[in-house]
Image 1 (cartoon, rainbow, N blue to C red):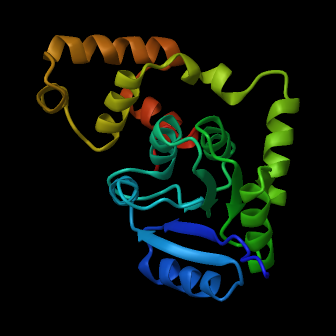
Image 2: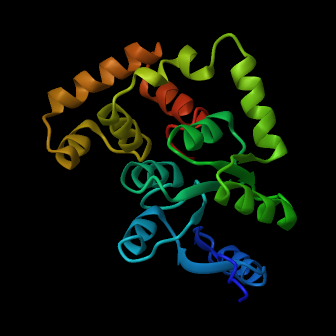
Length: 220
């Protein structure tokens, strides 16, 4: 009796509709691949995961409402059996390291070949890790350095609330607006801002936002 080959169920999280649907169309043509979901942001991914059970999620990084790094973290906490491959035009070391640190099993640049994408999906599905050439070079360079960017800037010591405040500052919110959105006092916001600048050894908010963008705390 002939056995049925296991199909790899794939979800695509990508905010650019044209790219999302084009990628889905290509993957559907591959024998053994099945595209079971399309999402435009991290919130949509989490919503679909209430009923969908993909084996692999191709996760873009820069998406509205919830970016790929945050979505990867949440999925890895609740459903670690789902394997995530970062797929992005951003090869910044912090993006790559944050995706891997938060549970991604692979990372590909959007300029990769389709053959490379197919190999990555098959490798990660089989339990391996797959990094495109650019990502692999970044990881090797970062870990061969005596001190990482994160250690230099103090990013690793930031709390989740402090990161939240940095993101709100980057969006142009003033202290009063941040206090209202986070349901805390203006004095508490100011205290957080002082602590953030001290940890990152910076003098003012413009410097903070620049470093936050450069290091991937927020997406420009």
